[in-house]
Image 1 (tube, helix red, strand yellow):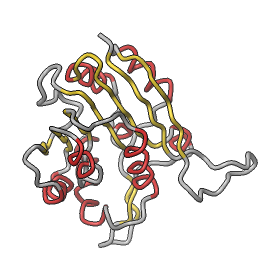
Image 2 (cartoon, one colour):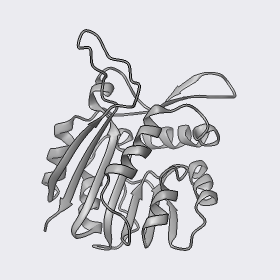
Image 3 (cartoon, helix red, strand yellow):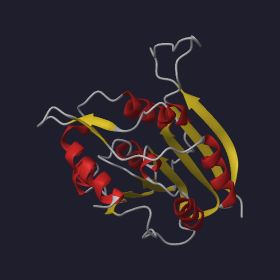
Amino acid sequence: MSSSQNVASAYNQWAASYDGQVNRTRDLDALILREHSPRVRGRTVLELGCGTGKNSLWIAAECTQLVALDFSAGMLAIARERVPAEHVHFLEHDIREAWPVADASMDVVLSNLVLEHVEDLRPVFAECARVLRKGGKLFLSELHPMRQLLGGQAHFDDEASGEVVHVRAFPHSVSEYVNLGMAAGFKLRAIGEWVEEGAEPMQPAGVPLPRLLTVRFVRTD
């Protein structure tokens, strides 16, 4: 079974309990997206890794068109029930392959908690550059690389077996996100490192470990 199939199978397994389980990474991501992502009101938006529609409902209320991609059928089934709007299109698709989206048709691409599951990010950045109009915005939100280096990755408690399931992940550095984005023709606008409220400080530094990394780009050519 390929790594892609492993990830999709894990998210299919996770789908039914995803929204109900405690998940500080998911919840912080939702907060950061709403407060710090590019403006989506009145714009065409492509969402990568939409999952159960955890963010799609908010995006759909703001934008004129939303195309949301995910390769977990289980997650998408929940998302479609959550956001039954005519201007929203949920598509089952592996983002490592060419996207079913026209050239220069999107104003904003949002990628939240998905790129840790992609080993080679270059095709993803190339597709982002292809589908965005000039001046279009790209927003990435990912598990912070420092957490990845310490062994952090997406995981969940399987309610049937009681076992902890770790979803296949690949570590990426801050410089990898930035340099690959610029190589694809994007201009870097901002980097953010985010800590959830109430996070415990790590010793000996005495400060909390960042949970999320966000990177904002603009397509300039």
